[in-house]
Image 1 (cartoon, rainbow over the protein chains, first blue to last red):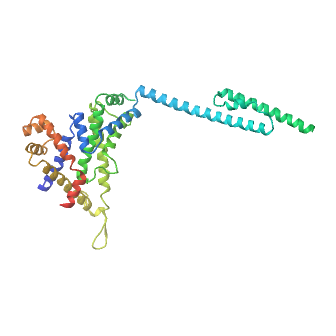
Image 2 (cartoon, rainbow over the protein chains, first blue to last red; image 1 turned 135 degrees about the horizontal axis):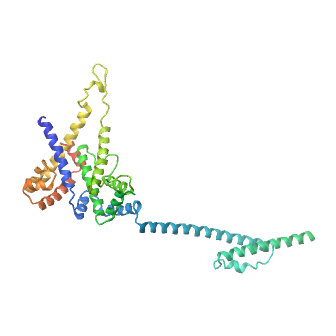
Image 3 (cartoon, chains in turn green, red; image 1 turned 90 degrees about the horizontal axis):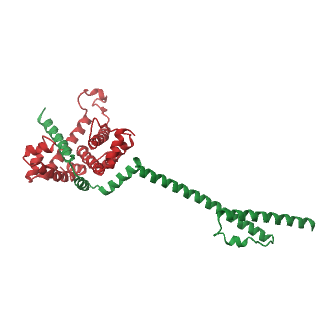
Length: 150
Length: 207
């Protein structure tokens, strides 16, 4: 081995030793944080990622339970939204029936209920809808008879 | 979940978990810098040392990588080995990809192929790459030498590092107390952090 090769090997060995030495195992947390800071790393942000990684990939039973609760709550919200959509549909149909009955010249006795949509329960609303459907059908039937007699 | 994976999760969730996570990230940065002193890259393929360290831990807690506790009882040491392997592969791939085709046109117009070169000798591109790496490493060493110059205790640690990486051995060789060696290690670490691969590459262009 010539002197050039020896220098090259010594340089590489020195850099390896230096790296192993400064990356030693005995470091305390504050030393590590200090070292990371000098390398431009935000230790707090890194620790946030650590906690997230544990929660995501190795959750405790508490975290699993919290996640299950969250999923259940989300599912419940979806159900509620679906019920609300149905309710709004019923309201729209009630308005349509009331409007068509008014066009037919029939007094809308259900108007009072109609104004109280906000207070009505879902079941009450559905019941009102069925009543109005029946009244309109009766009205149309009566009108049909009048027309055929006239 | 295997017993070793469970144990790894237990340790990471314990009082030492945060230290292990940060120590591994710190280790990845220092190791990447060491490779970077040879290749002028902190890490190829747009990876960050922190990402490598985090991925290794996530693979262990998911059970995608196995910690063999019988082989390496210390979790942090096992994780460091995995990071070393990941970073080593990245740089090996990078260095291999930077050796260009060795095809050459001879003065007589014929094409020289790989067979034209003897099997054991490096081809011209490998030789060029090697000499460039050596030059970068020597500049890194010069910059470290300049950083410790005039600080007698640091200079003695610097010289001892030609022989060993063990703090105990360094204490013996220099006559310093082990506590003092640890304290100087911190100082040397801060100095080394300033010698980034980019700075070494810049110096190489200027010299």
